[in-house]
Image 1: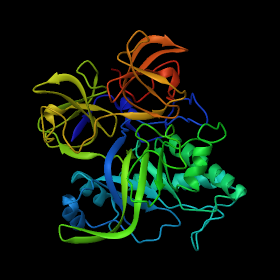
Image 2 (image 1 turned 135 degrees about the vertical axis):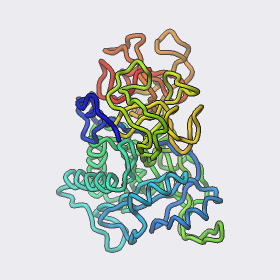
Image 3 (image 1 turned 120 degrees about the horizontal axis):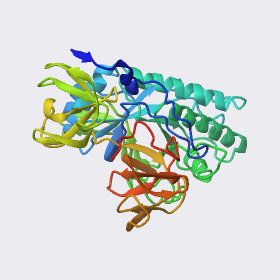
Image 4 (image 1 turned 120 degrees about the vertical axis):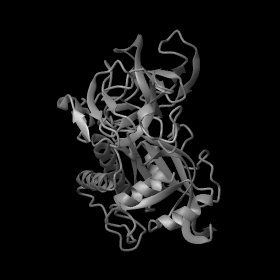
Length: 430
């Protein structure tokens, strides 16, 4: 049980729509992350199946090279029943270490080659893209997925030479992206390399369409490479934004269990969840990850808390690790029974939130200012995976700088956060 000291401050963790005013329009629309949000970047091999496997099957497949699984969470064109797919299943398999890739099989192109597909109406692609994103959001939340998760809209192959059909698809996917962003989720698109992927790449820098955060292509050439795709420039979707389905329907066996799967390689955002751990000694919950922040709640011994991610802060006992809860508050890891009380604990991810960059050649520097050494550059539309914000040299209208997961810094002026003059909630201060 816990005792609230300042109820109003707990609103920072509410899973409501973000209240920040969007500073950017198309193509890099703002993601309104609520408190408690976290994003999860998965790098490695994955597989997807029509029906979510059982816990027993995934236990056997822990010996496989795959650590993430694509799962169809909803959509009018979803073709398989999902008897396993519950919030309890999600909690169990993610606690085992599996990363989830949420897939939504919504409306398809008017010129889709998929038999019997329910299709987008050419007269209402924006309205339908919004409504499909809303349904995907509701399905994801019902499964326990947190804001900051990516949801991949499945757009199957269609006639790439049909101009009006292409325009309908692009308007639909733009509305899909904007609505997911409005609700605090990342927008992903799964598409065939010769239709949807090709057309999204053609309008990558267009101010007419909102750009998805990640692209997952279907190209069954048995190569898992995430570069040198024939229809997508290497300059597009460059920073933890790519996935490839490189082999189609076949079976594989691990731990004596055979499943029908497709093969994928990912370096892209996936689903984010809360991880349940208990308080070992009465613990204070604060608005930030240091003892300088005010205490707004107290959790007694034995209380189960939902941890969204871990970050660094004031050292307490043997650790500098702090747990960010799904309500947006922070509790030192020293009083929580995670696997370690000295360092980070798998499978909990580190805290970061990604936003798209808005200019080409954005310098990544060794510190928060233009006098620091340039260590690299980011392409336009790349994801800046931000761990925290701090003050530095003024660029344009802002003195805010973003510290990225690789330890480098970029000015916030060229990143599609909620403001280009001040800090953006719920990002922490460095």
